[in-house]
Amino acid sequence: MNRIIHAAVAAAGLLALAGCAQNAAPVDTAADAAAIHAATNAWVAAYNAGDADKIVALYTDDAIMMPPDAAAAIGHAAMKAYLTSDMAASKAAGVSFALDTDASGVSGDLAWHSGTFHVAGANGASVATGKYTEVWHKADGKWLMIRDVWNNDAPAAAAPAAAAPAAPPTAAPPKK
Image 1 (cartoon, one colour):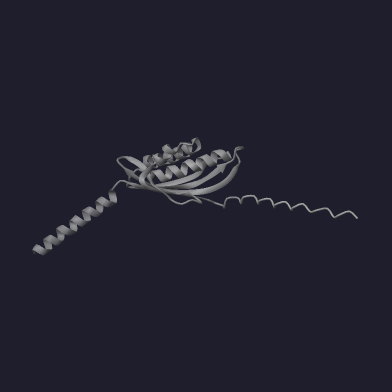
Image 2: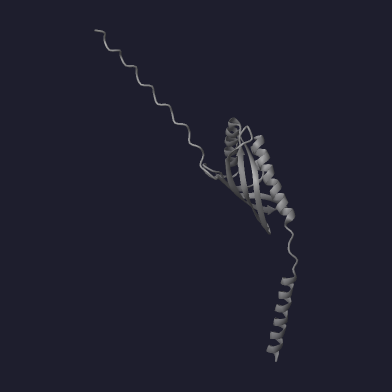
């Protein structure tokens, strides 16, 4: 009889737990998603302004940045070195970076954010397009990136071919 009572209590407990799980309210992640989107927009604004410190502050100390056509930058010092050089090259080329589309998802203290971007020339015309994926972690109420990957949709344009060296002057034939 004791076993029947224990089994009944256990079954009632399982049913109660199942009922609680089904009635749990969904977690509202809109504020977290908005914070991540705003931080990515701040990244782009800081890039176009040449502010590497502002960008690096969006990453955890051990984050990994994986830009196109470059080695992975691990940690703040490597990220700052890469960004400083890349932003200077962008400024010299007269190009800027802009986001086009994006989507995100949040689950607890982890989130992802991805989308597309374009690079605009000085006249505003798009000179390149690509996509990105970011992984974010929330600690102490603040979202920071732990992984950042972006790449281009097409390879960079080939460098112009070097001009062929001029042929050495030939001697004029002797006069007869």
